[in-house]
Image (cartoon, rainbow, N blue to C red; front, top):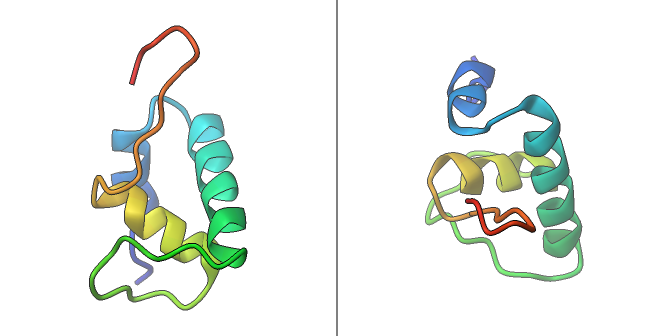
Length: 68
């Protein structure tokens, strides 16, 4: 089974489009030598690491109108 599961991710994100956008931006940051915020990541790929950060509340997004 994949971690984090798509069900867990969609419960935390308002929409799958927001989830994809946030994860892809964070994956680019990780690729450019940013430090991983998860203590023991299960994934070795950048997108997987970004999703693990998202599910563990280490990665937070904020909308332009101030919503989180």
